[in-house]
Length: 202
Image 1 (tube, rainbow, N blue to C red):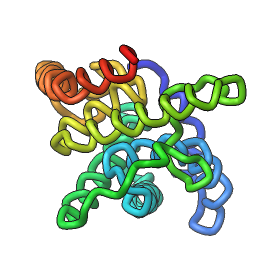
Image 2: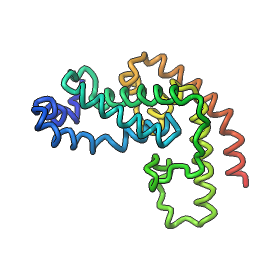
Image 3: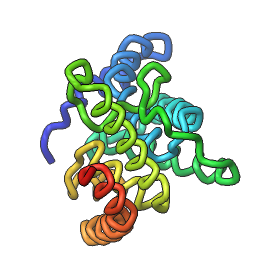
Image 4: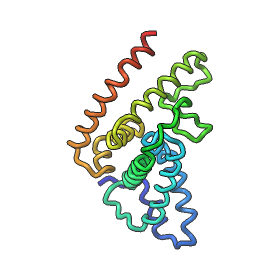
């Protein structure tokens, strides 16, 4: 296995006394907080649930970091905790209606960043509005996937993990990764083909 880029910091957390953990753990938290929240938001589609799942992720990470033995990459372990926490929160809130996604990732509300990283300041207002509408519809389509397919889609296309990294993170075989992604592609294709036609054939 390649050297884990987080190993030095993780080992510092593991070696720290309970009273001295704050500095190292805070650095680790700062390093992962945005990625964890992004995964949690994309899976739960709900800012409140995403925040709860993020807090749960870091709580587990804090309590169990001493047990981590680098049998996988540390980031894979963190993603696994975040995915499981998000799916649990999604199940617990399954009776609630999906939160409106009209903002499509408004950073001022602590939501996940938009897919497109272009500078909006140089976009015409109509183009920016159309892009936000498309992003919201894509997120809605992802939210309608099953929790397992939603998680694998987020890891692949939002977090840009390789098939091998997804396999390690979710502790499933490469064949299962490919199968779930294939089913997710088919579902998203059905959902998004008319949406994309609407936006790009205007």
